[in-house]
Length: 504
Image (cartoon, rainbow, N blue to C red; front, side, top):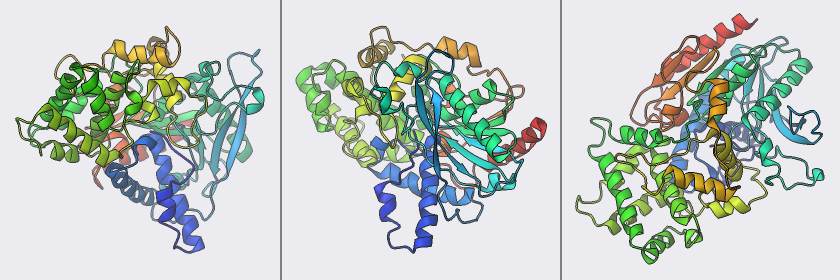
Protein backbone atom coordinates (compact mmCIF):
# COMPACT_ATOMS: atom_id res chain seq x y z
CA UNK A 1 0.00 0.00 0.00
CA UNK A 2 2.19 2.72 -1.15
CA UNK A 3 2.78 5.23 -3.89
CA UNK A 4 5.38 5.72 -6.55
CA UNK A 5 6.60 8.64 -8.66
CA UNK A 6 7.61 6.31 -11.48
CA UNK A 7 4.91 5.24 -13.91
CA UNK A 8 4.74 1.49 -14.24
CA UNK A 9 5.66 -0.22 -17.51
CA UNK A 10 2.07 -1.07 -18.35
CA UNK A 11 1.04 2.57 -18.00
CA UNK A 12 3.87 3.76 -20.23
CA UNK A 13 2.93 1.31 -22.97
CA UNK A 14 -0.63 2.61 -22.99
CA UNK A 15 0.32 6.18 -23.93
CA UNK A 16 3.12 5.81 -26.49
CA UNK A 17 0.86 6.47 -29.44
CA UNK A 18 -0.52 9.78 -28.14
CA UNK A 19 0.54 13.29 -29.01
CA UNK A 20 3.13 15.11 -26.89
CA UNK A 21 0.53 17.21 -25.06
CA UNK A 22 -1.72 14.19 -24.53
CA UNK A 23 1.22 12.21 -23.18
CA UNK A 24 2.05 14.90 -20.62
CA UNK A 25 -1.56 15.13 -19.49
CA UNK A 26 -2.03 11.38 -19.36
CA UNK A 27 1.27 10.79 -17.56
CA UNK A 28 0.21 13.18 -14.82
CA UNK A 29 -3.21 11.56 -14.60
CA UNK A 30 -1.57 8.18 -14.16
CA UNK A 31 0.85 9.57 -11.62
CA UNK A 32 -2.21 10.66 -9.69
CA UNK A 33 -3.49 7.08 -9.96
CA UNK A 34 -0.18 5.77 -8.66
CA UNK A 35 -0.20 8.31 -5.85
CA UNK A 36 -3.61 7.01 -4.80
CA UNK A 37 -1.70 3.83 -3.95
CA UNK A 38 -0.33 5.79 -0.97
CA UNK A 39 -3.84 5.63 0.42
CA UNK A 40 -4.06 1.88 -0.03
CA UNK A 41 -6.37 1.90 -3.07
CA UNK A 42 -4.00 -0.12 -5.25
CA UNK A 43 -2.28 -3.35 -4.15
CA UNK A 44 1.44 -3.43 -3.34
CA UNK A 45 3.96 -3.95 -6.13
CA UNK A 46 4.37 -7.69 -5.48
CA UNK A 47 0.60 -8.18 -5.98
CA UNK A 48 0.37 -6.41 -9.34
CA UNK A 49 0.90 -9.36 -11.65
CA UNK A 50 -2.71 -10.31 -12.29
CA UNK A 51 -6.36 -9.41 -12.65
CA UNK A 52 -6.80 -7.55 -9.37
CA UNK A 53 -4.37 -4.81 -10.31
CA UNK A 54 -5.85 -4.40 -13.78
CA UNK A 55 -9.33 -3.96 -12.31
CA UNK A 56 -8.21 -1.41 -9.74
CA UNK A 57 -6.02 0.49 -12.17
CA UNK A 58 -9.05 1.16 -14.37
CA UNK A 59 -11.14 2.20 -11.37
CA UNK A 60 -8.48 4.64 -10.20
CA UNK A 61 -8.04 6.16 -13.65
CA UNK A 62 -11.73 6.99 -13.54
CA UNK A 63 -11.41 8.27 -9.97
CA UNK A 64 -8.49 10.52 -10.93
CA UNK A 65 -10.50 12.03 -13.78
CA UNK A 66 -13.36 12.75 -11.38
CA UNK A 67 -10.96 14.24 -8.84
CA UNK A 68 -9.84 16.75 -11.46
CA UNK A 69 -13.42 17.97 -11.70
CA UNK A 70 -13.55 17.61 -15.46
CA UNK A 71 -10.45 19.76 -15.92
CA UNK A 72 -7.36 18.40 -17.67
CA UNK A 73 -4.25 17.88 -15.54
CA UNK A 74 -1.57 20.55 -15.64
CA UNK A 75 0.62 20.16 -18.73
CA UNK A 76 3.77 19.92 -16.61
CA UNK A 77 4.74 17.67 -13.75
CA UNK A 78 4.99 19.18 -10.28
CA UNK A 79 8.70 19.43 -9.66
CA UNK A 80 10.22 17.20 -7.02
CA UNK A 81 12.25 18.74 -4.22
CA UNK A 82 14.49 17.43 -1.46
CA UNK A 83 14.54 18.77 2.08
CA UNK A 84 17.46 17.92 4.37
CA UNK A 85 15.87 17.03 7.70
CA UNK A 86 17.50 16.10 11.02
CA UNK A 87 17.88 12.36 11.35
CA UNK A 88 16.64 12.82 14.90
CA UNK A 89 14.38 15.81 15.46
CA UNK A 90 14.37 15.19 19.20
CA UNK A 91 18.10 14.98 19.92
CA UNK A 92 20.16 18.08 19.17
CA UNK A 93 23.42 16.18 19.63
CA UNK A 94 22.60 14.00 16.59
CA UNK A 95 24.07 15.87 13.59
CA UNK A 96 23.26 13.44 10.79
CA UNK A 97 20.52 14.25 8.29
CA UNK A 98 18.05 12.50 6.04
CA UNK A 99 16.84 13.67 2.63
CA UNK A 100 13.05 13.84 2.41
CA UNK A 101 11.38 14.28 -0.96
CA UNK A 102 8.33 16.43 -1.49
CA UNK A 103 6.30 17.84 -4.37
CA UNK A 104 4.40 21.09 -4.74
CA UNK A 105 1.67 21.98 -7.24
CA UNK A 106 0.88 25.70 -7.22
CA UNK A 107 -1.16 25.63 -10.43
CA UNK A 108 -4.41 26.63 -8.70
CA UNK A 109 -2.88 28.45 -5.74
CA UNK A 110 -3.62 32.01 -4.70
CA UNK A 111 -1.61 33.74 -1.93
CA UNK A 112 -2.99 33.20 1.54
CA UNK A 113 -4.93 30.07 0.58
CA UNK A 114 -4.47 26.81 2.52
CA UNK A 115 -1.93 24.07 1.92
CA UNK A 116 -3.42 20.64 1.21
CA UNK A 117 -0.90 18.14 2.58
CA UNK A 118 -0.92 14.60 1.21
CA UNK A 119 0.72 12.43 3.84
CA UNK A 120 3.38 9.92 2.88
CA UNK A 121 2.64 6.25 3.40
CA UNK A 122 4.60 3.03 3.65
CA UNK A 123 6.08 3.30 0.18
CA UNK A 124 7.53 5.63 -2.41
CA UNK A 125 5.48 8.76 -3.05
CA UNK A 126 5.03 10.92 -6.12
CA UNK A 127 3.61 14.19 -7.34
CA UNK A 128 0.03 15.20 -6.73
CA UNK A 129 -2.04 17.58 -8.80
CA UNK A 130 -4.56 20.28 -8.02
CA UNK A 131 -7.90 18.48 -7.91
CA UNK A 132 -11.44 19.83 -7.69
CA UNK A 133 -11.34 20.27 -3.92
CA UNK A 134 -7.98 22.07 -4.05
CA UNK A 135 -9.22 24.25 -6.89
CA UNK A 136 -12.27 25.24 -4.87
CA UNK A 137 -9.99 26.54 -2.11
CA UNK A 138 -7.22 27.84 -4.43
CA UNK A 139 -4.97 25.60 -2.35
CA UNK A 140 -1.29 24.89 -2.62
CA UNK A 141 -0.94 21.12 -2.96
CA UNK A 142 1.94 19.43 -1.13
CA UNK A 143 2.94 15.76 -1.05
CA UNK A 144 5.63 14.61 1.40
CA UNK A 145 7.33 11.24 1.15
CA UNK A 146 7.66 9.27 4.38
CA UNK A 147 11.24 9.02 5.61
CA UNK A 148 13.08 5.79 4.72
CA UNK A 149 10.70 5.07 1.82
CA UNK A 150 11.26 5.70 -1.87
CA UNK A 151 14.26 8.00 -2.16
CA UNK A 152 13.83 9.69 1.23
CA UNK A 153 16.92 8.15 2.77
CA UNK A 154 20.07 9.04 4.66
CA UNK A 155 22.62 10.37 2.15
CA UNK A 156 25.28 7.84 1.19
CA UNK A 157 28.01 10.26 2.28
CA UNK A 158 27.01 9.48 5.87
CA UNK A 159 28.46 5.98 5.48
CA UNK A 160 25.48 3.81 6.39
CA UNK A 161 23.50 1.45 4.20
CA UNK A 162 20.04 3.07 3.79
CA UNK A 163 18.23 0.32 5.72
CA UNK A 164 20.97 -0.72 8.12
CA UNK A 165 19.86 -1.90 11.53
CA UNK A 166 21.72 1.08 13.04
CA UNK A 167 19.51 3.56 11.16
CA UNK A 168 16.11 1.90 11.51
CA UNK A 169 15.44 3.31 15.03
CA UNK A 170 15.04 6.70 13.33
CA UNK A 171 12.11 5.34 11.32
CA UNK A 172 9.21 6.24 13.60
CA UNK A 173 5.80 7.86 13.35
CA UNK A 174 6.95 10.88 15.34
CA UNK A 175 10.04 11.52 13.20
CA UNK A 176 7.89 11.37 10.05
CA UNK A 177 5.40 13.87 11.49
CA UNK A 178 8.26 16.22 12.41
CA UNK A 179 9.62 16.00 8.84
CA UNK A 180 6.19 16.79 7.45
CA UNK A 181 5.47 19.82 9.62
CA UNK A 182 8.93 21.22 8.86
CA UNK A 183 8.31 20.96 5.12
CA UNK A 184 4.80 22.37 5.52
CA UNK A 185 6.14 25.41 7.35
CA UNK A 186 8.80 25.93 4.70
CA UNK A 187 6.15 25.86 1.96
CA UNK A 188 3.89 28.24 3.90
CA UNK A 189 6.72 30.74 4.30
CA UNK A 190 7.84 30.48 0.68
CA UNK A 191 4.38 30.87 -0.86
CA UNK A 192 2.70 33.04 1.78
CA UNK A 193 0.17 30.27 2.35
CA UNK A 194 -2.36 29.77 5.12
CA UNK A 195 -3.30 26.79 7.25
CA UNK A 196 -2.36 23.25 6.45
CA UNK A 197 -5.03 20.58 5.91
CA UNK A 198 -4.02 16.93 5.77
CA UNK A 199 -5.26 13.99 3.72
CA UNK A 200 -4.32 10.33 3.82
CA UNK A 201 -5.51 6.77 3.72
CA UNK A 202 -4.66 3.51 5.48
CA UNK A 203 -1.38 4.05 7.40
CA UNK A 204 -1.12 7.56 5.98
CA UNK A 205 -4.74 8.02 7.11
CA UNK A 206 -3.48 7.31 10.62
CA UNK A 207 -0.52 9.68 10.27
CA UNK A 208 -2.94 12.26 8.85
CA UNK A 209 -4.93 12.10 12.10
CA UNK A 210 -1.79 12.04 14.24
CA UNK A 211 -0.46 15.04 12.31
CA UNK A 212 -3.52 17.07 13.24
CA UNK A 213 -3.31 15.89 16.87
CA UNK A 214 0.42 16.66 17.11
CA UNK A 215 0.42 20.05 15.38
CA UNK A 216 -3.06 21.60 15.75
CA UNK A 217 -1.68 25.13 15.29
CA UNK A 218 -0.35 24.21 11.85
CA UNK A 219 -3.01 21.78 10.65
CA UNK A 220 -6.70 22.75 10.52
CA UNK A 221 -7.96 19.21 10.07
CA UNK A 222 -7.60 15.84 8.44
CA UNK A 223 -9.67 13.67 6.11
CA UNK A 224 -8.67 10.09 6.89
CA UNK A 225 -9.73 7.23 4.61
CA UNK A 226 -9.54 3.83 6.31
CA UNK A 227 -7.19 5.44 8.83
CA UNK A 228 -5.74 2.73 11.08
CA UNK A 229 -5.30 4.91 14.17
CA UNK A 230 -5.58 2.02 16.63
CA UNK A 231 -2.26 0.10 16.62
CA UNK A 232 -3.58 -3.28 17.75
CA UNK A 233 -0.92 -5.80 18.71
CA UNK A 234 -2.90 -9.03 18.34
CA UNK A 235 -5.05 -7.97 15.40
CA UNK A 236 -7.30 -11.02 15.09
CA UNK A 237 -10.12 -8.64 14.18
CA UNK A 238 -8.60 -8.37 10.69
CA UNK A 239 -9.50 -11.99 9.98
CA UNK A 240 -12.86 -11.65 11.74
CA UNK A 241 -13.76 -8.79 9.39
CA UNK A 242 -12.84 -10.83 6.32
CA UNK A 243 -15.29 -13.50 7.50
CA UNK A 244 -17.98 -10.85 8.01
CA UNK A 245 -17.43 -9.47 4.49
CA UNK A 246 -17.52 -12.91 2.86
CA UNK A 247 -20.60 -13.84 4.88
CA UNK A 248 -22.84 -10.82 4.20
CA UNK A 249 -26.41 -12.21 4.06
CA UNK A 250 -27.55 -12.77 0.50
CA UNK A 251 -24.08 -12.21 -0.99
CA UNK A 252 -22.51 -15.59 -1.73
CA UNK A 253 -23.92 -18.25 0.60
CA UNK A 254 -21.24 -20.47 2.10
CA UNK A 255 -18.27 -18.42 0.86
CA UNK A 256 -16.75 -17.77 4.28
CA UNK A 257 -17.04 -21.46 5.20
CA UNK A 258 -15.40 -22.50 1.91
CA UNK A 259 -12.52 -20.10 2.55
CA UNK A 260 -12.07 -21.53 6.03
CA UNK A 261 -12.15 -25.11 4.71
CA UNK A 262 -9.39 -24.22 2.28
CA UNK A 263 -7.20 -22.87 5.07
CA UNK A 264 -7.77 -26.01 7.15
CA UNK A 265 -6.72 -28.04 4.11
CA UNK A 266 -3.38 -26.18 4.08
CA UNK A 267 -2.96 -26.83 7.80
CA UNK A 268 -3.63 -30.57 7.46
CA UNK A 269 -1.18 -30.97 4.57
CA UNK A 270 1.52 -29.05 6.44
CA UNK A 271 0.97 -31.30 9.45
CA UNK A 272 2.01 -34.31 7.34
CA UNK A 273 5.64 -33.24 7.39
CA UNK A 274 8.38 -31.65 5.31
CA UNK A 275 7.86 -33.53 2.06
CA UNK A 276 4.18 -32.62 1.86
CA UNK A 277 4.51 -28.98 2.82
CA UNK A 278 7.60 -28.41 0.67
CA UNK A 279 5.73 -29.77 -2.34
CA UNK A 280 2.97 -27.23 -1.70
CA UNK A 281 5.47 -24.38 -1.39
CA UNK A 282 7.12 -25.35 -4.65
CA UNK A 283 3.75 -25.53 -6.40
CA UNK A 284 3.28 -21.86 -5.41
CA UNK A 285 6.77 -21.01 -6.78
CA UNK A 286 7.95 -20.41 -3.21
CA UNK A 287 11.00 -22.69 -3.06
CA UNK A 288 12.73 -19.82 -1.21
CA UNK A 289 10.56 -20.73 1.80
CA UNK A 290 11.57 -24.39 1.84
CA UNK A 291 13.46 -25.47 4.97
CA UNK A 292 13.90 -21.98 6.44
CA UNK A 293 13.39 -21.14 10.10
CA UNK A 294 10.14 -19.27 9.48
CA UNK A 295 9.25 -20.64 6.06
CA UNK A 296 5.97 -22.23 7.13
CA UNK A 297 4.64 -19.07 8.76
CA UNK A 298 5.95 -16.92 5.90
CA UNK A 299 4.14 -19.08 3.36
CA UNK A 300 0.89 -19.08 5.33
CA UNK A 301 1.07 -15.30 5.71
CA UNK A 302 1.24 -14.95 1.93
CA UNK A 303 -1.67 -17.32 1.36
CA UNK A 304 -3.77 -15.53 3.98
CA UNK A 305 -3.01 -12.21 2.31
CA UNK A 306 -3.95 -13.72 -1.04
CA UNK A 307 -7.50 -14.28 0.18
CA UNK A 308 -7.78 -11.20 2.41
CA UNK A 309 -6.57 -8.73 -0.20
CA UNK A 310 -9.28 -9.82 -2.62
CA UNK A 311 -11.76 -8.68 0.00
CA UNK A 312 -9.63 -5.65 0.91
CA UNK A 313 -9.50 -4.41 -2.68
CA UNK A 314 -13.13 -4.97 -3.61
CA UNK A 315 -12.86 -8.32 -5.41
CA UNK A 316 -14.43 -10.73 -2.92
CA UNK A 317 -16.93 -11.85 -5.56
CA UNK A 318 -14.09 -13.27 -7.67
CA UNK A 319 -12.74 -15.16 -4.66
CA UNK A 320 -16.12 -16.61 -3.79
CA UNK A 321 -16.86 -17.58 -7.38
CA UNK A 322 -13.59 -19.48 -7.63
CA UNK A 323 -14.05 -21.27 -4.32
CA UNK A 324 -17.54 -22.33 -5.44
CA UNK A 325 -16.03 -24.30 -8.31
CA UNK A 326 -15.10 -27.00 -5.81
CA UNK A 327 -17.59 -29.65 -4.65
CA UNK A 328 -18.36 -29.83 -0.94
CA UNK A 329 -16.39 -33.07 -0.65
CA UNK A 330 -13.26 -31.73 -2.37
CA UNK A 331 -9.96 -33.22 -1.21
CA UNK A 332 -7.39 -31.15 0.64
CA UNK A 333 -5.17 -31.26 -2.43
CA UNK A 334 -7.99 -29.96 -4.62
CA UNK A 335 -8.64 -27.08 -2.22
CA UNK A 336 -4.95 -26.12 -2.13
CA UNK A 337 -4.72 -26.25 -5.92
CA UNK A 338 -7.86 -24.13 -6.22
CA UNK A 339 -6.32 -21.53 -3.90
CA UNK A 340 -3.13 -21.55 -5.95
CA UNK A 341 -5.10 -20.87 -9.11
CA UNK A 342 -7.03 -17.91 -7.71
CA UNK A 343 -3.92 -16.37 -6.13
CA UNK A 344 -1.86 -16.70 -9.32
CA UNK A 345 -4.69 -15.33 -11.44
CA UNK A 346 -5.22 -12.26 -9.30
CA UNK A 347 -1.65 -11.44 -8.25
CA UNK A 348 0.68 -13.27 -10.62
CA UNK A 349 2.74 -16.42 -10.21
CA UNK A 350 5.51 -14.76 -8.14
CA UNK A 351 3.26 -13.40 -5.41
CA UNK A 352 4.07 -15.89 -2.65
CA UNK A 353 7.83 -15.80 -3.30
CA UNK A 354 8.11 -12.03 -2.84
CA UNK A 355 10.53 -10.59 -0.28
CA UNK A 356 7.71 -9.18 1.85
CA UNK A 357 6.72 -12.74 2.76
CA UNK A 358 10.28 -13.97 3.26
CA UNK A 359 11.66 -13.29 6.74
CA UNK A 360 15.22 -14.14 5.70
CA UNK A 361 15.02 -11.77 2.73
CA UNK A 362 13.79 -8.95 4.97
CA UNK A 363 16.56 -9.69 7.48
CA UNK A 364 19.31 -9.41 4.88
CA UNK A 365 18.01 -6.37 3.01
CA UNK A 366 19.99 -3.13 3.34
CA UNK A 367 18.58 -1.06 0.48
CA UNK A 368 14.98 -0.10 -0.16
CA UNK A 369 12.86 0.24 -3.27
CA UNK A 370 12.62 3.48 -5.23
CA UNK A 371 9.05 2.49 -6.12
CA UNK A 372 6.33 0.58 -4.33
CA UNK A 373 6.06 -0.58 -0.73
CA UNK A 374 9.19 -0.63 1.40
CA UNK A 375 9.06 -4.17 2.71
CA UNK A 376 11.89 -4.09 5.29
CA UNK A 377 10.85 -0.61 6.41
CA UNK A 378 7.19 -1.49 6.84
CA UNK A 379 7.99 -4.71 8.67
CA UNK A 380 10.24 -2.66 10.99
CA UNK A 381 7.41 -0.26 11.75
CA UNK A 382 5.02 -3.15 12.38
CA UNK A 383 7.56 -4.90 14.59
CA UNK A 384 8.41 -1.85 16.71
CA UNK A 385 5.46 0.58 16.80
CA UNK A 386 2.24 0.04 14.89
CA UNK A 387 1.95 -3.78 15.02
CA UNK A 388 -1.34 -4.72 13.29
CA UNK A 389 -0.04 -8.30 13.59
CA UNK A 390 -2.70 -10.39 11.88
CA UNK A 391 -2.85 -13.51 14.01
CA UNK A 392 -5.48 -16.19 13.47
CA UNK A 393 -8.52 -15.79 15.74
CA UNK A 394 -9.39 -18.72 17.96
CA UNK A 395 -12.75 -19.29 16.27
CA UNK A 396 -13.22 -20.16 12.57
CA UNK A 397 -10.11 -18.42 11.21
CA UNK A 398 -9.78 -17.73 7.48
CA UNK A 399 -6.01 -18.08 7.75
CA UNK A 400 -3.68 -20.78 8.94
CA UNK A 401 -3.66 -21.65 12.63
CA UNK A 402 0.14 -21.51 12.34
CA UNK A 403 -0.19 -17.71 12.33
CA UNK A 404 -0.22 -17.24 16.08
CA UNK A 405 0.87 -14.03 17.74
CA UNK A 406 3.98 -15.80 19.02
CA UNK A 407 4.86 -16.90 15.48
CA UNK A 408 4.47 -13.35 14.14
CA UNK A 409 6.56 -11.92 16.98
CA UNK A 410 9.21 -14.56 16.24
CA UNK A 411 9.36 -13.27 12.66
CA UNK A 412 10.14 -9.84 14.09
CA UNK A 413 13.00 -11.21 16.18
CA UNK A 414 14.50 -13.06 13.21
CA UNK A 415 14.20 -10.05 10.91
CA UNK A 416 15.73 -7.64 13.39
CA UNK A 417 16.94 -8.55 16.89
CA UNK A 418 15.96 -10.80 19.74
CA UNK A 419 13.46 -8.92 21.87
CA UNK A 420 12.13 -6.80 19.00
CA UNK A 421 8.44 -6.29 19.75
CA UNK A 422 5.86 -3.58 18.98
CA UNK A 423 5.38 -0.96 21.68
CA UNK A 424 1.79 -0.12 20.84
CA UNK A 425 1.12 1.17 24.35
CA UNK A 426 3.20 4.28 23.75
CA UNK A 427 1.36 5.25 20.55
CA UNK A 428 -2.03 4.59 22.11
CA UNK A 429 -1.10 6.64 25.18
CA UNK A 430 0.08 9.50 23.01
CA UNK A 431 -2.68 9.61 20.40
CA UNK A 432 -5.60 7.73 21.95
CA UNK A 433 -6.00 4.67 19.72
CA UNK A 434 -9.60 4.32 18.57
CA UNK A 435 -10.56 7.33 20.72
CA UNK A 436 -8.12 9.93 19.35
CA UNK A 437 -7.07 12.72 21.68
CA UNK A 438 -8.12 15.71 19.62
CA UNK A 439 -10.63 16.97 17.11
CA UNK A 440 -11.13 17.96 13.48
CA UNK A 441 -10.42 14.54 12.01
CA UNK A 442 -13.00 13.03 9.68
CA UNK A 443 -12.89 9.25 9.37
CA UNK A 444 -14.27 7.64 6.22
CA UNK A 445 -14.50 3.86 6.27
CA UNK A 446 -15.82 1.05 4.07
CA UNK A 447 -17.93 -1.91 5.12
CA UNK A 448 -15.86 -4.79 3.69
CA UNK A 449 -12.45 -3.45 4.71
CA UNK A 450 -10.43 -5.88 6.87
CA UNK A 451 -8.68 -2.86 8.42
CA UNK A 452 -12.01 -1.41 9.55
CA UNK A 453 -11.66 -2.35 13.21
CA UNK A 454 -8.36 -0.49 13.59
CA UNK A 455 -10.09 2.78 12.65
CA UNK A 456 -12.81 5.02 14.11
CA UNK A 457 -16.12 3.77 12.78
CA UNK A 458 -18.60 5.81 14.83
CA UNK A 459 -18.58 9.56 15.41
CA UNK A 460 -16.98 10.86 18.58
CA UNK A 461 -17.02 14.44 19.93
CA UNK A 462 -15.13 16.55 17.40
CA UNK A 463 -14.31 13.43 15.39
CA UNK A 464 -17.06 12.70 12.86
CA UNK A 465 -17.14 9.40 11.00
CA UNK A 466 -18.92 8.16 7.91
CA UNK A 467 -19.34 4.60 6.65
CA UNK A 468 -19.77 3.64 3.00
CA UNK A 469 -21.59 0.32 2.81
CA UNK A 470 -21.86 -2.10 -0.11
CA UNK A 471 -20.71 -5.50 -1.26
CA UNK A 472 -17.20 -4.83 -2.49
CA UNK A 473 -16.63 -1.60 -0.55
CA UNK A 474 -12.97 -2.14 0.24
CA UNK A 475 -9.98 -0.39 1.74
CA UNK A 476 -9.83 3.36 1.04
CA UNK A 477 -12.73 3.00 -1.39
CA UNK A 478 -11.32 0.25 -3.59
CA UNK A 479 -14.21 -1.46 -5.36
CA UNK A 480 -16.77 1.20 -4.46
CA UNK A 481 -19.20 1.69 -7.38
CA UNK A 482 -19.68 5.23 -8.76
CA UNK A 483 -21.93 7.35 -6.59
CA UNK A 484 -22.02 4.97 -3.61
CA UNK A 485 -19.52 6.98 -1.60
CA UNK A 486 -20.91 10.42 -2.49
CA UNK A 487 -22.52 11.01 0.92
CA UNK A 488 -19.20 10.71 2.73
CA UNK A 489 -17.37 12.73 0.07
CA UNK A 490 -19.89 15.53 0.37
CA UNK A 491 -19.57 15.53 4.14
CA UNK A 492 -15.80 15.71 3.76
CA UNK A 493 -16.14 18.80 1.55
CA UNK A 494 -18.37 20.47 4.13
CA UNK A 495 -15.95 19.72 6.97
CA UNK A 496 -12.93 20.96 5.04
CA UNK A 497 -14.77 24.26 4.49
CA UNK A 498 -15.85 24.47 8.14
CA UNK A 499 -12.52 23.59 9.73
CA UNK A 500 -10.51 25.90 7.47
CA UNK A 501 -12.80 28.79 8.43
CA UNK A 502 -12.44 27.93 12.12
CA UNK A 503 -8.66 27.79 11.85
CA UNK A 504 -8.43 31.19 10.22
